[in-house]
Length: 409
Image (tube, rainbow, N blue to C red):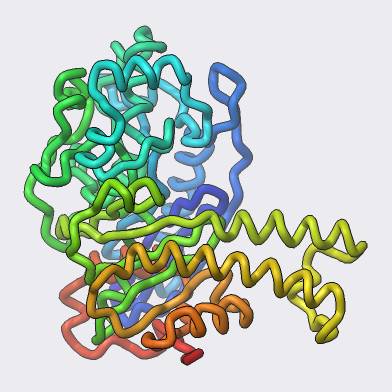
């Protein structure tokens, strides 16, 4: 039986998973790699340690008894670029997208290519500093020219991981162009004018027509996590992927992104075929974590109190209920932006909040016209990469074990 190795690089957890032809996981390893710092002392991914781990995990997978690795691909987080010199060696740190972007440099950028509202609308990218991957290159050119001049190629992280495991050296990973990079003019399907004017296209992978399934370019993790639902769901749906960020992703909303929606943190993700996925972000997981911590300190309880049985009507119960009502209200407002006037029938929640009954009940009340489901798709990002790599395997009925749905309303 042929097996598939997927390298799944998250911001915190790194995983290597082996799938059989029924898409069952037959091998899994994970690690958390300590960060290093860049030249300014800001924490960032240790690129060499990551490369070593990938190579070790790949080598170990090939030595597994009874396992025949015949296919490989990867998925990785976005807004991150690996800069290589002419010999294909990293020439700079893997800069952290959370690193503050210099305000004066952003003013300079907007003076040349703004106004902000125009460029944001054209690129479907809210201005987010280094979370705009394009601005990372702009910063290097204007604040680290001694590094920039040595860069031969700047690869999106999935592209670099794919290259590390033996994939294409210069094949575009199109899903990484979505998700607020500020790089592309979404109407033209090409790099934006400012990117060309700055000469950044000399460093970036050219934009071709979308590659067919089976290309080993890797995938952006959010788009990859959406893919199993696209394969498995028969009716139109909206997915709320919950974690630190709660992202409402609607593959069935073809309404243009408006400026007002962008002001409320709407954006496009890009699917493997180049299709735009209208989405809305809400910092819900972070708000929940901060709220829970505050309640725990006030009431003198452990921060995991909400995972235990709370006496109904108690002060603790009331405090947490108030927190969840506020979160659900904001979540519903965000989700409505992605929902639009689409013909979606199902609202699916995966991730951490899929196990939070108050969150789920609140959404069911907020969207009485939709069927709300809590979903569990183990290792959705890695599974999405495996499914996409083997689209031909999915022509028959996909095994039911891949997704578990619990109907809430």
